[in-house]
Image: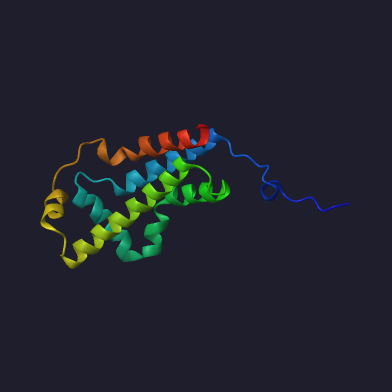
Length: 142
């Protein structure tokens, strides 16, 4: 009798889209919660604290990136929208790291310096909780 391979190796295992969306929403809520601040400078300050503790902890504090990366690999890199989400999440992390480095070295351009102190609208730090799950729903059902 031939050895039976697990479902995930045979490619037969499916992921429930509702659970994917709920888990992604939870990850996005967590990320918005720990980064939340009334200004962009406050958000960068929160990120700097984790950056200076340990860069790997900072990356661990972005569970939605790792979850989207898992889905991308699980779905064998198929899907333009899923690729777009992964690129957006990676770009967001890279841009924030760039801002942290510029703030640390005091080489931030004046335009960006002024933006750090502008107040954010109350909904702005939470917009990712809407955008990424909406795009994920499109990726899973589209």
